[in-house]
Image: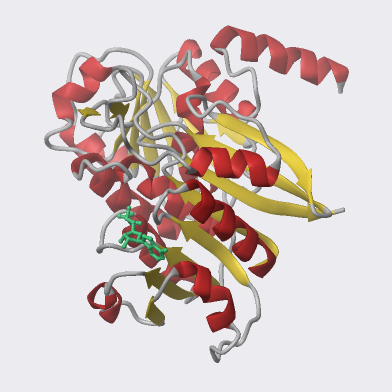
Length: 371
Ligand SMILES: C[S@@+](CC[C@H](N)C(=O)[O-])C[C@H]1O[C@@H](n2cnc3c(N)ncnc32)[C@H](O)[C@@H]1O
């Protein structure tokens, strides 16, 4: 075991994936790695081991084997007939030629270079920038490897949406989808709706695989957004009144699996939400928070998206109560500007805390074990 840890540390040092990314989800299928060169192969293997994923090296690709392939390199020489059914393209270096058919059929394109991305992004928007020296970018990118094959086309659409619709939450849409999906939710709550955008797009997509029940809450009337979602209810109310209201609802479960909070971002309001919603969570339930890192760049006037765009605006006076409320109520200190993946203990549970600094911040706090 010591030897294994030592080997992993060497890889981690080499590629700076010093901390393991822990997702608390099962790997649903075998991952096969078809790499053009040893460097690309080692890079994929290091990423997989940093994330606790199992992969197998291969020199040929097959159809119909229900595996997820990672095709890694800079000039992947596979013709249309030889491509596997389900694959991620990982450009590990600058490439010479864009191969439209390869990219069109890829479930996701991971790319080490913005110059590469610039050459195809107008035609193919299902990409993620994945620099090989910075694990901050690795967590959102790797989540697709924990999805079953039949959900990867949904994921692809969400990634296309996320890279095309530039908002303060757009980068988090695939991430939110994955984290909510991993909870196998029967009931989810979206507190703060506003429209069919951002969180609503992600959570609506999760309702399909599990036939989950989605409850939307907003102080304003956003009922039109919910009219088109089967198995969903919209409640126009202050979300702090929801716990009492939930007791009167005729649902077949007394707890909620995922509560996503994106409302006023005021400190006291967020404190109230954490205190009121935490007791409603199921055994392996989670809270999600948007706006836990509002406009951190250029003297708090801008934020960066995962697609490389930066939005500058008038954010100096923005309400920034979410992160302080999380820190106080969960008794956890973190730097909002950094990616964080760690556990903490509270109220007889071990919780996982994952914080994504991009796009005004997304924080997931989930119960993983009762003590
Ligand atoms: C930032 S928007 C939500 C955005 C949405 N989640 C998305 O991803 O696009 C915040 C929403 O919270 C709602 N809101 C503010 N205070 C609230 C409260 N006390 N209870 C319920 N909703 C509230 C606002 O009406 C607004 O629609």
